[in-house]
Amino acid sequence: MSADTRAITVGIDGSRSSLDAAEWAAREAQRRRLPLRLLHAGTEPAVPGDVFDIDDMDDIDDIDDIDVPAGRTRAALDRAAIELSYAHPALDIIARRTATPAVPALLAAAVEAETLVLGSRGRTGSAGFPVGSVALGVAARADRPVVLVRAGELPEDERVPVVDGSPPSTAPYLPVVLGLDPDASADDLIGYAFDTAAVRSAPLHVVHPWTLPTSTLRPWRHRFPGTTVREHRVDGDPGPRLLEASARAGLLVVGRRTGQGPGRAARSLIRHADCPVAVVPHD
Image (cartoon, rainbow, N blue to C red):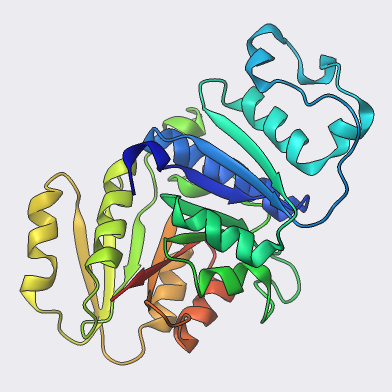
């Protein structure tokens, strides 16, 4: 992938969860100094009227003063682009609509994305991804990392709680948690976790069953000397430990083998984790 195609791409379907995912994606794009791409897939009919030029945001003092045709304002993709441009004026944002069905459109977009971001249902009732959902289907087949963000996710949720009255945006980031199978050749998975922790200046907590060979993490520790790494060895199933760790994490990173969907343990974490989950394909 050439450098000029790298971007954070997020799927927009008008749901609250997809809008919260878009806000998460905007923050990730800013952290990585990448453009943000918004994608609405499906056959929703276009609404007549001129598309608002998001480059004009510098001339607007209040988003409620924007003169946009009512139908366009209500359109999910346009509204998301306007709101994100207002909240993140320095961010390069491109919004695109396609009639291609959601799963193939998102899989195609993932090929040219640094990361693909999708929303899930909120933390109520049977919170998580229903089996067969677009989000889980894409996460099982995408060629690039897919981050799944729950509805209700807030910027302060990825940072250490503030107790002294200082702005939440100045607080350190919570740890990135990596679930690692010692038997897997998972350089893409490990590299993603280390890079994400480094971008946030966050510690990296590695949870793995049994004993992890020292050679597994050594080259990554050398490549990211500023990242604090803590290993947590679990005798048996690491799932409960990872689920517990997600309550105090900014991001949970799990892997799946290329050409296969997430295993049963990863699917359980996707459904029940208390933080966004990154699903990373690896050999």
